[in-house]
Length: 66
Image (cartoon, rainbow, N blue to C red; front, side):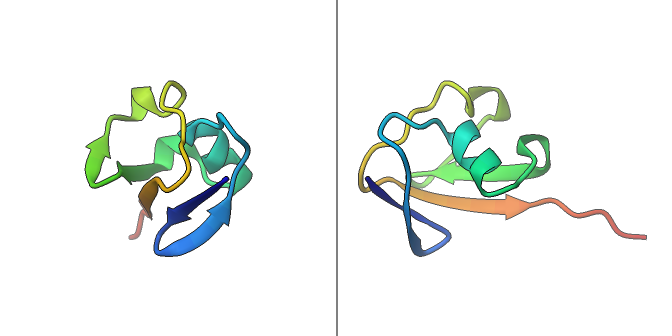
């Protein structure tokens, strides 16, 4: 199925969770902020939230600096 992540279409497996998508993208779930269909999503819900065709995600990585 196709979702949109950061404005780009992306193919994901049916029933994939947001956590699984983040791992596929090689992103550490504890270091990102996710907006799912316009709503900020609490990190503890990444594994429980299943993706559906047409979903829209915005994923922002947190980076440290010094």
